[in-house]
View 1 (cartoon, rainbow, N blue to C red):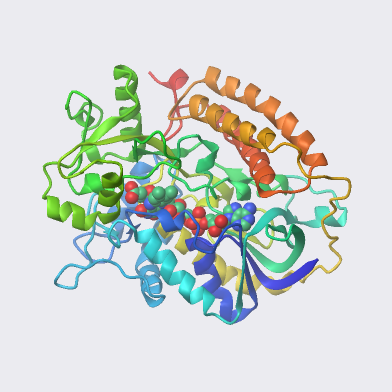
View 2: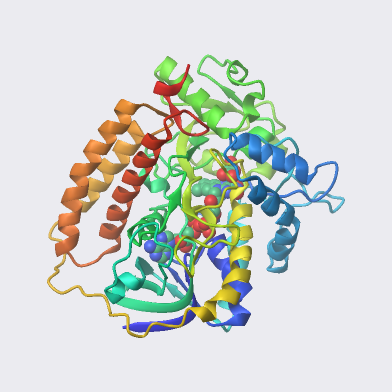
Length: 519
Ligand code: FAD
Ligand code: SIN
């Protein structure tokens, strides 16, 4: 069954929705999203969005902080472009109805997070992402040119490969004609044909057993681009957030925002010692890779499964006002953050690498654009500065919107693309084959490709994944498509890409910390 559209957008987080709103007056827009419009990583963002809006802060300082966190691997031109556009993009968010907290004098209440040399994080309490998503969803649902297809799962990108042409990686003229997508409610696989396709499918925290990311974050976009022979970069740089709430019964891990440390929260070990200054002179507000490694080291030394975040010295009223979601969540599991320390441990949080794009959000596949966490733009380098990802998502959605408006008409709809062929497949007999393999993949990555890595651990992870890969590919050939099976397959491929990238780096840098390459 076919659907045709000018713009196909895969994903309904900040990247996908802001792109939609920017292009909607120039053509017909179709957004597909594998869950509800609202269920995205964006919705869970707590701390906020980084932007320089007034002196004494300056673009130069924000640029420097971003480059320092990125450990020398940021693309300077991109860092400058994104950071200098930030004020205009914040204005867009406001025009679409997003509310940011202000002081009594009307000035923004700017928060601070690790690696930032100034207070520059705009936020809405501690649920900034929820507020952004709320505002954008309202605009999207009211726009006459935008069609939203919820519970539509993108399976694969369509290229000349589907017209029986041989397509190879590093080939310059691969073209994207849309995507195959499974309507999860009816099991119909649609051929969605588009002139421009925006991949905004977010990250892949679910590659790990301990993650802050919701269950939608299964790296489908990375895997689809890899299969379509597109290029990815920096895939080994996976950011672990230092302070996930330690509550082993719960998955995903609830996040305790870095803004809590920006507000004065202190990390302590079980003896009550503040340990961060033993690791870095910036203490509790050092960049994330350093704080996560320090906690990992404290946990290994003590044999404990967590450390503590101490807010007991902060004014109780101010703390609970500023962080109502965190306050309530901790209270719900019996912790009063104003009088008790919060048990915290690192959790997989953010993919700094992704689908390679140029400064206009163009991937190596013509007419396929990418923005947000699925992309690798050059902004983050080897480690993302806190609250720079929402900024990157809206920035590259904007850059790509301008470019795709110009380029789309040179990629006419390809009516001749065949529909998906699932002859000879049948429903899986035992779902446990999928669910158990998923758990194994997540454990392998958690244990062998985590915060601290080694050649031996990477080799072991690769060998273990290989067995699961062969079993899953065999199952995929014979089984009717389902989101769970596709996600498992995508995560296995992603695990392989991460390990391949990690092995190729041959040094410790930023988030990729190898015991074999440290002094
Ligand atoms: P997402 O918001 O994740 O959206 C991805 C979309 O793609 C979803 O709609 C999903 O359903 C859809 N999708 C995925 N695969 C498919 C498929 N196969 N078919 C169809 N649809 C698909 N960053 C900050 O800058 N500041 C913060 O304060 C902050 N806090 C965070 C707190 C938490 C708990 C988490 C998890 C992340 C946080 N981040 C923060 C990171 C930030 O939220 C994300 O990087 C950003 O929201 C990504 O936006 P996106 O549009 O790229 O993807
Ligand atoms: C947080 O609030 O700590 C998350 C910020 C981010 O991931 O950028």
